[in-house]
Image 1 (tube, helix red, strand yellow):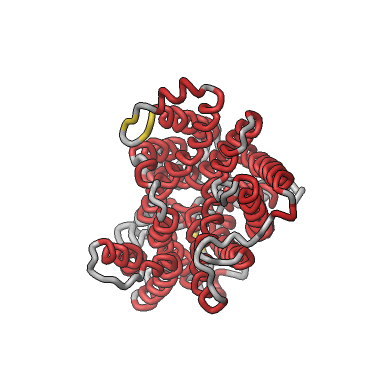
Image 2 (cartoon, rainbow, N blue to C red; image 1 turned 45 degrees about the vertical axis):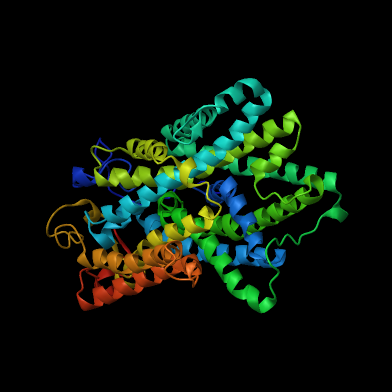
Amino acid sequence: MTDHIEAPVRQAEPTPSGHEPHYDPSLTNEDLAPIKQQNWSSYNIFAFWMSDVHSVGGYVTAGSLFALGLASWQVLFALLAGILIVQVFCNLVAKPSQVTGVPYPVINRAIFGVLGANIPAIIRGAIAIAWYGVQTYLASQSLSIIFMKFWPGWSASLNDTTFLGLSLLGYLCYAILWVAQAAVFWRGMESIRRFIDWAGPAVYVVMLVLAGYLVSEAGWDNISLNLSQGEHLDFGASIPVMLSAIALVVSYFSGPMLNFGDFARYGKSFAAVKRGNLLGLPVNFLFFSILTVITASATVPVFGKLITDPIHTVEQIDTTFAILLGGLTFVIATIGINIVANFISPAFDFSNVSPQKITWRAGGMIAAVGSVILTPWNWYSNPDAIHYTLGLLGALIGPLFGILIAGYYVISRQQVDVDALFTRDPGGRYWFKGGYNPNAVWATILSGVPTVASVLVPKMLLDLKLTTVDLTEIADYSWFLGCALGFVMFIALERRSPRIIVTPPAEAGDEAQVTAP
């Protein structure tokens, strides 16, 4: 983990512009081209996941599982089982980008075609915009608490006026967060790496202080780890609920899991990436979950009620220092997760659509502006929004994940011609049919439609009172359904009408997983 030897992937010398000399400019810019040096250590990947896990949304999602009627040990089991699944899938999606040095939308060119790769890129980018707004809004609530504490009169006057569902104070706090995140992002990937290297551990320190304070106030004897709020379930009845909780965890991480290659490409080796995933996912997430349970448990004897939202927990502590420290901490935590999960992805995704017109920074700013237009504060106030939104998110992302994994590991057999990813030559390996692989496009449609329907139709039938049968729990498994359908559909279509060319092992050689120039 302390080794800082750089591991170059490519051997060809770049042109003065930083591009390979024969790469088509319409498919290339300095952010999309294969990187020359990969120097992220296991700690950098570990810190990435700390920034992704330590968020208000993650805390609330973990806390919301207690409302399902599960015992604390069952909640912890579901969280750990879910995160182990995420770890396995992250390792799968990391390898193609790490060995080629290209981001998620570019590696998709080997599956969808050099132009068809814009389909998954735009879908992932659009989802990131929605979540960028949600996370910024959640963090802005922390900032609002600070304003209300230090400038109560002025802040109250700003709260009297609302526009499009949000007060002027809300807009002010949202704007401050918006600018702060944009400033960190604008400085580039190296600055982002340095930010997340300290942000994740810093949040841990404050969370430990918060938990320690609440436990000392309550007394350890008054801490009960049984936080079940719903109807108590026996073991048999709890099994399907635990499965739903596991699926919820996977859906929550499905976004950054899909485009994890955007970060894995910087790993000095695939082994370093896997070590970082091990530390950052099961190890880190288990500790975070235990800390969440203890902190939430202590709110009962201290405040007389269970509080699973850390912002509200800090708000209940009537001391200036606690509110300032807690509020700023959750602001920093949200900046970290928003940048790694919802800023980097659209930056690459939208840049991939038109590399010469949309730079990496411009792509990220498209997401930032789009997040405001969506007014997340209006649609995220529903109590069921966490579960419902995650289900829909999984429905859109699952098929794309399944197709990528099937294409790289099963159909392509881990062979990628890196140069062919950047050419519009009709004879190019990934030009397929007009720049699109029809099999990938059809696999997306055939797997995406039923998966999205599994989320929307059951709820729609209930809302329209067309049925009294509640089948909305199907949505909990939308990511798995979409992933499985995408995986199977793409393999079936490629077997029926092959589009991806695979070099026989005898010709490719033992080390020809990546064709270098």
